[in-house]
Length: 409
Image 1: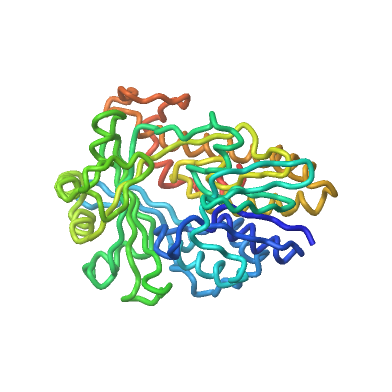
Image 2: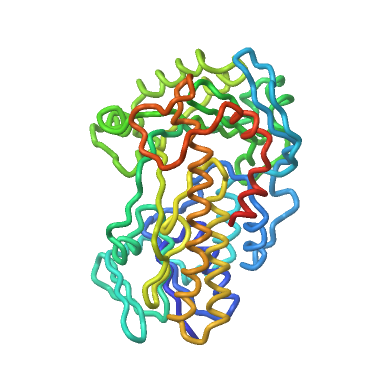
């Protein structure tokens, strides 16, 4: 029986692991985090490719797993919907899907607190070394360890994430803390606001323990804001402990004065219906937005998938679906080719094309944040993507982004 070692036990790693287990592989998942990952992620709008991969991974997705979304709507400062587009889909929580995958994977093969520090390929195997010195060998190593991937850094050290000039404030609010008017208006749609050079997107997601019943749901927001690299960005990611967290600040360490300033800006930039929601959110956190593109996704018997290989900005909602397609694509290649090296090489050739397309499509959408109110590029941005035209807001709201993304991928 062939053995795969998967570095990273988040969504991409568990998708790959579950699929390979069901295709006859022995799989060991090594996750550096000691605790559970259930609290990671926030809201997610699943695309069809993710649902197909979940089914292939042996996960039965309950019909009531999500909240039905009927349309997309963009609001002006007075709270009037000036652009709407009917588009039905559903939203759920990242943790709910993660838990289904985790429960479906053999518990004895999932190793929490296993921190991989080195990766090596040999003529007949591939190995990983843990921080306490243990070396584990397998027929295949899969790097599913995210944007700051140890596996990618070992294979391709020059490929690194690139900050694109803006960040996102994120948060969720329990439905019971929202007004009745807000629930009636906004819990059945993807909602957008577009201050000059900024964007707010908000939508409902499942509540605690995946509860999607009215009264128990949550409302998820992402607020994109341009922040120049350098001192301004460093300030945002320096915690209450005085430490600068370059790769991402823990939510509990975000400085309260930054949160207060953000909420003050929300009262000035958004209609009251959204400013009030943000005001009530506790534990809001911030993340920098990056692009990451790998030239290849393999080296011998080692492959990288998901955000370890390509990071597309969140605007097209392709992150988890891209990881799902990578996991399924790798499994397909392993079935088609007798030699693992040939399978991994074929997988890389196919999925790098899709990864580049996702990154460039998301960058095209994100180029909105590179414009000043006159339609000119803001200072400090470094992007090959041209700024979008003045019709962007209507197109962003109206275009069927998930379908376009799936066609591209």
